[in-house]
Image 1: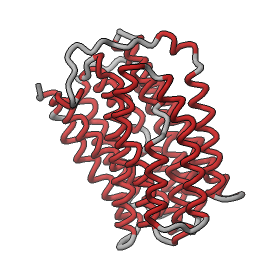
Image 2 (image 1 turned 180 degrees about the horizontal axis):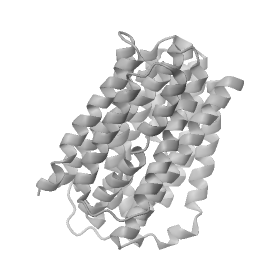
Image 3 (image 1 turned 120 degrees about the vertical axis):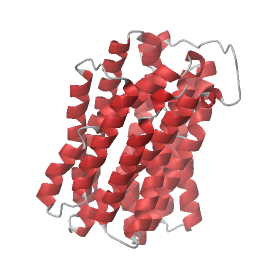
Image 4 (image 1 turned 135 degrees about the vertical axis):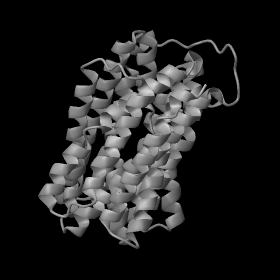
Length: 362
């Protein structure tokens, strides 16, 4: 909810997609910069302390951000508040992925678990944009952000209270180093792929939002993004329901190629209903891509750096999304939605090319 509602809130207040994109990018950059530090802390001491701190700090920062935009605070102050909100985001997803790696040793079970986790995220990404559309149509983007703050507070505390966390294991750090999982060449190549295809995600988000605005249906942005997530859920269930025999890097490369092809179709569609239908098709490979990303992180990273590795992958993902949103906002100052979506397709195809090389690295 936060990325889209923040984008709509700032765009409505400033009448600038560039400033809206920059604010959302700062929010994501704040998370991206701090997440690996939090991940290393969780690897060393467990998840409860960091998650409780985030449960308190994140909603406070979001509420301050809403107040700052409403009060027409200087742009630097809004950007700083956005960065602070992102920096305090509760890292529940990476804790979940690290915990699953600890508990499930069989690769097929782990792949199914990561597929279900990706489907869960996509289901949330269906509900989130739909709720934003409802709040924007019935009230305001400010109320959507306030509701998101309440959800974050409640969700983080519920996760901390989960009985499953009693089985969390803190792995001994046999060979500590300053850079953690970043010393592994395959992991650095994977981060490059993540940056590229998540940049496409950011471009898609702002491109779809701009398409709805240009069509005179601003509130439908959340609906269109939600429809894309419907396709993603279907793809995630299909991928997780069977065993795949091709090497993971090759699967990843093919999936990202298909994503680029699907998004390129969005760039040439002008009719709203046809755009909605193609959005479902374009989203089919998105959850499988996230599942493959998690599997590759679990395969490459050592147990002592597991949570930190997942936070680095989340950092790469969110940094790419932020850069994509910022780049999309800049493009919209000079062009229109189809140009942004064409750029998203090109970046996805570039990510596919890099993914194909991961298996060759040692």
